[in-house]
Length: 115
Length: 338
Image (cartoon, rainbow over the protein chains, first blue to last red):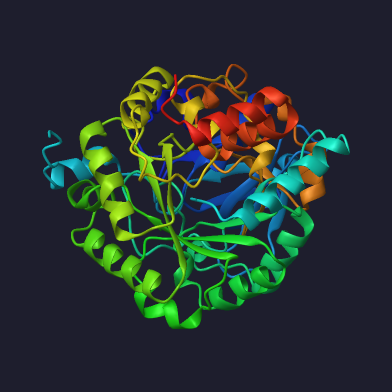
């Protein structure tokens, strides 16, 4: 795989990473990461086509496993089969990263909670 | 009385009829999320962290009404995002009221006073105001100074116009019982119909992983909050659920009790976890592997005691056993009895 899924801690962002799974297990892990990611991803298809959007659904136990994305310009979701996927780039901004409670608490002194 | 008799009767009739018909799984509250866009950015909230093109999407009124019809639950809760941002929210609410759904329109109240003129008071429509504590705690929780004062002003304005108003409060691990009890006093003095409280729990992708409560801590906190509770405090929720929060009862999660519909479809399995989507309510109910979820069955459900999973369990208990029924009567009339 282009980047080892397990080597990135939860305190790091996936933004900018590029995963190229080389087997089924890695493909499922990469899609799981894309499903959890709070930003757009670019899915590289084996045909050479690139599909960029937000992955909101994935079904990895169906007879034909698939992901569903909303594309920025589309009204209806686009479905992509697992078997069509060659790689995934975490191309959009990670909208969850850097917005933790700890970040906020550092900016604002908490009120005294006594009495 | 915190909840109007007509609403209690409707819910009781609905739950009893489901029970008598032998329906194993039925929804009680539809969680309708017409948009994720919000005018606040609370650090503990994972609902708003999406790319702009997702935040710009909204359910149409027709989609909202169809979801309510398809689901059939007697109560519709409209969280978000901030529902009052949705330009067609008055029409959505009106359509739901026309269907005789008890609507809880959840709002941070920043826009409420300005928008009140777009709504008509009704026993079916309640503004449920997000209030996470006294001024200091609330402004801190929503990451913006001054929001508490705006909300209080809006509550007074809504009450003056004859609207039903409740509060909804999420409590995190830094909650100070004495101050929360003072907050209850303050809300009831404002004249709200009742309060809803729930322990905060980590959304799958919520960034604030450290502020959520463990089960033991939840029990301890809610005992301190609700033991020797004042007669003036009214809670707009099942008394058995409150006992569950205090550790007096054990329930299993009922994730189908509060099904969630949003721009992605019907969310599996519940309001908090996002494990995929179903296209129809029927598909959600029939094809979700419910046995995979709940405390002891799913890692992410471990410490969850949130109302969207357990209040329906408490209501089911009330209407499916004499013990539950008499327990509800006792907890309603004598909340401080051991």
